[in-house]
Image 1 (cartoon, rainbow, N blue to C red):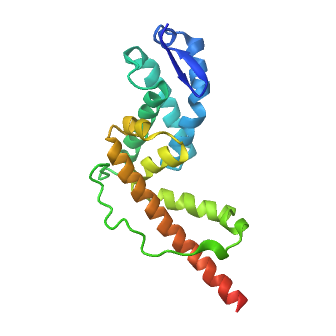
Image 2: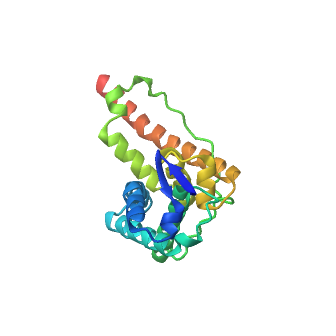
Length: 203
């Protein structure tokens, strides 16, 4: 029997392709949270994330018989979810052009480096700081945001990310580097302001 194992869970592809509802329900239960989380991170809206989750499993159910096992089952589901999310984004922004390999982000070197050593740890890990980082991620270009979310948030591998987005592994690496540098620059500015305020208070 052909099986796909992911996160210590094993799913029978034959059972899924034969229409085994119990096996499909088990697959849905296992993947619902990560797919919903990915949709929420990309779209920033709970209802949209719910819609993406529903559409992903509807399409998976309809096309599971065509799944050939060339990639992991999780990769296949993520690809469906990502495509659904991008379709929704393009409906909202018809001019949106998602080109990862030729993504022109200009200068990718950070313009300023701030020494964060003087900030207390609780401030570095504060709710405010996390909210700022999440907002900064949302403001990345769609291509950089997708790669960052899959690699640094969902902890997918370079290979898995490349398969999901259907781009080369080198494109993933370049886009990830650009995303990290862009976010580091935003955080440098954020914590730089924090340090300036602290210096004024202590003067």
